[in-house]
Length: 324
Image 1 (cartoon, one colour):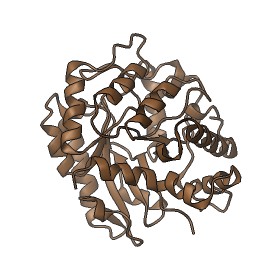
Image 2: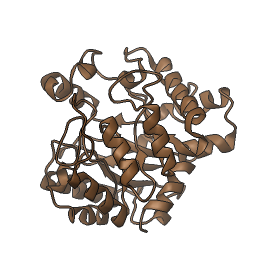
Image 3: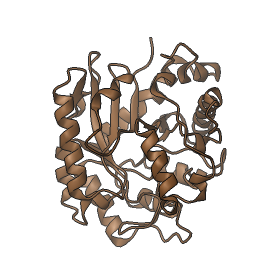
């Protein structure tokens, strides 16, 4: 029996054409956190997406909107919550964290790739970390019960989140720079600081963050995910590694955005060709080929350890951070 899957970050198109039904490629019983905005979205934009996704999910019996932790884990439905990949959709008003929480947002990161009012991004050449507003944001996330997420942030910003949070922080979808040097991957110091808060690092399946982005490198991407998991467990311990594959159902549109707006992403994104991803079917081996679960078993992880990585660890910290 495959383990329970907690997918801490995946993406649908961020406009009205998006359809929640695409998420049914994940197995029933999973928990999914779906992005509803990053630096390009205003408060109005992200609220419109949230209401659209919630309406679609409410009308589809395959999905259950997460209002509280007890909504997660039913075998006959996918539990659905949401995340923000930048603080821009807050519109500078920290009280909006509470509003987004009521609509199902359970994870938020201060900055996406580049500096904003909250802090620096991973592509900034000057790294000054969290601003005063960013520190206030972390405190507000703690108060409301939303994960403070260091993915896409600069190294110092990530370290500052760990210093300023009173509850476990996360990296929802970040790999290790020690295995593949890319500005989106995190340092060992960031990983240790996250673990010291009690937090969890979700390993992603994005080709350019794994070092295997050729269209035919399917097996290599999956093996690299397993390698990052093995490295993370050896570095910070089993309790602090999870899954945040960053699979993009909007892959074609996202690649078009990278091509048409290279200044927003830098050569670290653009030089590898169109981005490739590990799809949902490859996580638990539902595609007919060996999946990540089997690769982890081959690397010596027994069933209980794999269950912790695939879902138990993020579920545990949700119990410590979320309000309900």
